Length: 341
Ligand code: F6P
Image (cartoon, rainbow, N blue to C red; front, side, top):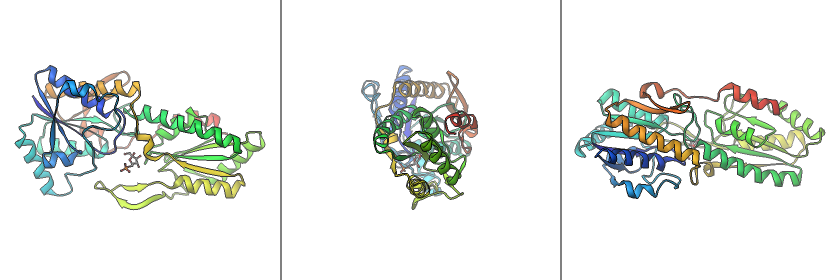
């Protein structure tokens, strides 16, 4: 079998674990794996490297992706799609394993449905918002990064009797913000799934101060809403039509200071959350997904995405997995609220 693998969309810790899992499994079954560079761009341009199992052993602890990534969309024009299909044939590939989020896997699903390209998908999103899989790799490392950073912020806000607003990633879903908020004993958690009533939030923070808590931690998702308005970082739109987010943290901090009179600061954790070496959990999850992606490819079980369901890795139809955002389950905010009164 001659397989190709690519990583698309935002990077995250654990991508290299998947790559290693794929390369080793294909190799163990007598096959060969090519890495396509910079996501779908490499697949269009035929920009590839040979991957071998010994070299990929070394990449396991590395964050990011050795293949590079991009948000290139081969369906932006029919010419690009055609070029991608030609490249696939020219390289004599038997299958393409795409590791990515909703955009990357949406393309993979279309290539399978419309052009019968033998593809396998592997779910990746730092936001943990892909449906059909319980957790995505990278999410655990990200939570630890947010937790460590916020624990450090806590010591300074405690000393200064301030409120600290911490802006986390999470475009449409509050998984990172809610889980990290629980992990750092936050005083408020603002997620995209719930519109924030700033007056109620400020009253709560004042009550907490009067009750003897002299500082506060407010966790907020980049996609959280204040009176229905999403705060945009810039007018920049990517190939898949997503606007760049960011800035809600600053806005919330300003309003809190104005309305409570408590000195307030803000930190946007940004891309720190996607960086660094993967945690043990993410290395294991990424490795397992890579092994199963390759096994499905070898078995000819195309048009599928490998997914974590409970403790098992299963294969689900790609078409089912893409196109529907998995927002934060309400029970997590419900549990978090025990500490947010
Ligand atoms: O893909 C997830 C994500 O990390 C979002 O949470 C964030 O809004 C976006 O990517 C940032 O994208 P970029 O790396 O292109 O700035």
